[in-house]
Length: 250
Ligand code: BJW
Ligand code: ZN
Image (tube, rainbow, N blue to C red; front, side):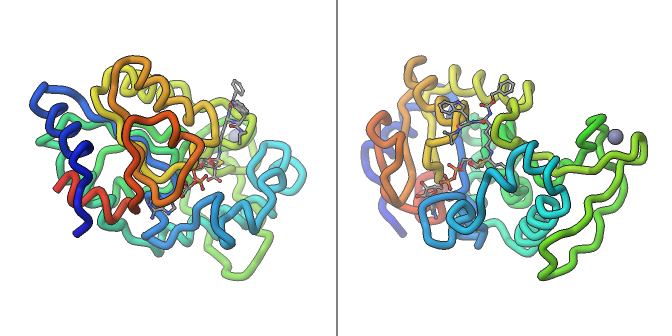
C-alpha cells in the first residue's frame, strides 16, 4: 500500500482530533481507475478526441441535438458498465468517523454506487434528464442505447414536446444554485480539503480550494500530475485516487 505522507496524515489527524470537518472535492481523475475517460491530459481524454464546443454547450444542442444526445448516450453507457474503484470505496467508509462533505464535478454516479452520499454535484448528473425548453424532469424510461450510432434522436418531453437533454452543466451555463451553495458552504466551513483528480481549470469549481484556504483550511491535492492548483495548495500527494484514499481514510 502507498505510504501516506506524514504531513497529510497529521493534517487529517489534527482535523479529526479538533472536531473539524473534511471537504472532499473530486474531479474526473476520481473515476479514471474505473475506466471513465478524463476530459484533459491524456491522448484518449474526451476533449482531445471530441470538440467541447460541438458537444457541451447549449448552442451545440440547438445546432445538432442528435449528435449531442448520441455522444451523451455513449457516455451514459460507459458509466453504466463501470464499477466504483477503491478510491470511491474509501470515501464511502469514513462517513461515520469523520464529518465529511463530498463535492464532485463528476456527472457519473460512482460515488453513490460505492455508498457515499454526494452533497453537491456541481456540474449536474448524466442521469438527471430534463426538458431543454420547459425544464421538466424526464420521468419516463431511458431510450435504448444503439452501439456505434453517432446520432440518436433525443426523447421528447411529455409536457411540451421539446427535446430531453442530459442533466449536466454545459460551458456558459450557471451551476445549479443549491449544489453551488452547498459546495461554497462546505469549502468555507472545512478544516481540511482534499482535492482529488481535477485539473483545476474549470471555474467556478476550480476556485473552491482557494476559498477554503482563505477561510483557514489546509488544502491537500491528490493527483498523479501537476495541475493549475498545485502551487496554491498546502500539500501535494502525487498518487492516484485509488492509491491514496484507502491508506489515508482506511
Ligand atoms: C487523476 C487520475 C487518477 C488522472 N487519480 N487523478 C474564469 C476564467 C475563464 C473562464 C471562466 C471563468 N469562470 C467561468 C469561466 C467559463 C467556464 C470555464 O471555466 N472555462 C475554462 C475551461 C476556461 N466555466 C463555465 O462555463 C461554467 N459556468 C459558468 O461559469 O457560468 C457562469 C454563468 C453564471 C450565470 C448565468 C450563466 C452563466 C460551467 C462549467 C461547466 C463544465 N462542464 C464540464 C462538462 C460537464 C458535462 C459533461 O460531462 O459532459 O464539466 S467541462 C468538464 O471539465 C466537466 C468537468 O466536471 C470539468 C472539470 O474537469 P476535471 O474534473 O478537472 O477533469 P480534467 O479531465 O480536466 O482533469 C482530470 C485530472 O485528473 C487531471 O489533473 C489528471 O492528472 C487527474 N487524474 N487520473 C487521480 N487515477
Ligand atoms: Zn418540456
